[in-house]
Length: 171
Image (cartoon, rainbow, N blue to C red; front, side):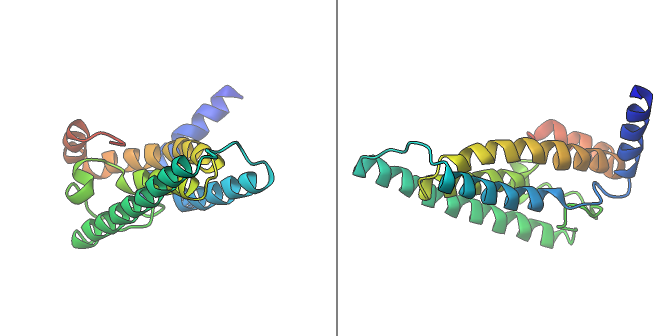
């Protein structure tokens, strides 16, 4: 059985030569984390800062975080458009993008996902959303980032390895 699982894992990694995934996991994970965090907060609320000033500060930080996430998305999508590369996470990359927000994070869109969900949690006074953001980040790394990195390694070789040495995965 272990051999079958190992063989299946190797076959899946071979498939990343053509495209990272067959299912666009990252947007599915993002939407599921928001929905699960919101539902958990609605039916099983966690304690929140009850003081008016503390609550207002946390909500303000949340709104700023949402704005930062939107800015990162816009910058990342623009950088990908400039390079005329594919934006969809389940399709093959056309070009290696290393400028704009990709100069400080190899995965600025996933970083923005984390910031967005965390910001929503702060703005909506729902502590389940930041918890969901952490779980989603882990899932995005396992189902998206690691497979995308294998795909980029195969497709861009040395250019990818040089970029990987210069820029961290998240921040």
